[in-house]
Image (cartoon, rainbow, N blue to C red):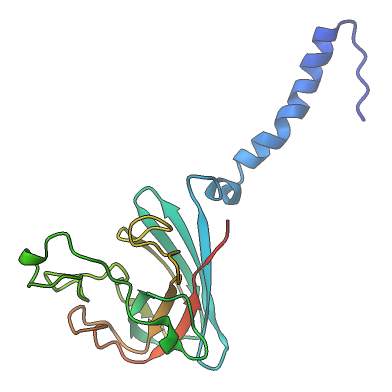
Length: 199
C-alpha cells in the first residue's frame, strides 16, 4: 500500500486519482475487451471434419452493419470451396443435420422470378440466401485466414443466427457456382461448426 505524506485532504485525493483511473484505462486499450462490449457481441464456431478432426475456428461479431465472420482454417484441401451459413445449429450425427442454407421470405416476390423465398446464389434475381457467402480460396498449405461481412444476417433480429434451432457454418468440397439450386453445386460437406454465443 503506497504511503502518502500530505498536508491536506485535497492533495491526498489528487495523489490517489491516477491509481483509480489506471484499471479502466487499461481495459479501454484492450481490443478484446472493446470487441466484447454491448455494441459488438460475439459468437464462435469450432469447425470439424466428418471424422471429428479440427478444421479451424471462427469468430462472429455482430456489428451495426451485419455479422463480421473471421475464420482461421487449417488442414483443408487446396482450391475453391463454398462456405455457407445453414439453418440448423447441429453437426451430429452427420453434417446433414445442419439442414439447408439459411433463407428468408422475399419482400417483393412478383419481381423476383415468382419466388416467395430467396433462392440460392449471387447470380440469381431472387437471391442470394442470407446464408450465402463468397467462396474461399485455400492455398497449397491448407491454412487460410479470412474475414467476410454478411450484411443479411443478425444475432437475434432479422434472419437471426440464434433463432429457435440455431445455425451452423458449413464448408463444401467444391466451389459454389452462385446459381445452381439449392446450394451452388458445391459438393459434399467437408467441415461443420455449430454457431454458439460467447456472451
